[in-house]
Length: 199
Image (cartoon, rainbow, N blue to C red; front, side, top):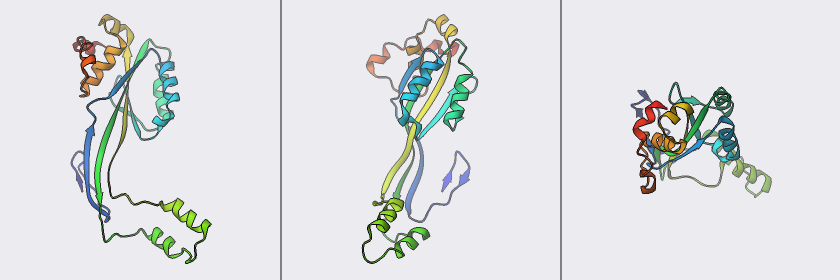
């Protein structure tokens, strides 16, 4: 398999019938504005489910600086703790790949095959439970991979006030710049988007 953005070739596992890279984001996302770093951190702390499957980008000097762990995210945000900065948090669902598995002639992983051979002929609850716990009970035939993409944009409050924009407007404009389609109610609030370059 060839992924042209990366200019790399990847070996497709035998059991995959098709595997296609894709970079697709939902056209509608959400944006939230926070007055300071503390309110942003508190909001994220309450959403523990967001710790799984999220790519975090922190933007000010460099848009999209990736933070692969929560501790790195905390370090990046804490540098703005004492400054007069607001934060816009943008969330969108993304799809990164689509796959379909073979329906026949499957190859078993060596460890799975060995564990299968070692199962006793007579049912033993403990042994079979361990096997099912390790390898599962279902075989996925097709699916789409992806997750939630999160961007944190640092906003200079003074520049935002000079632009006569609210935090909510700044968030909506940033979402629009990422290609999100605003709904009808939101379109009325986007008249100041041309001023976002000053924030």
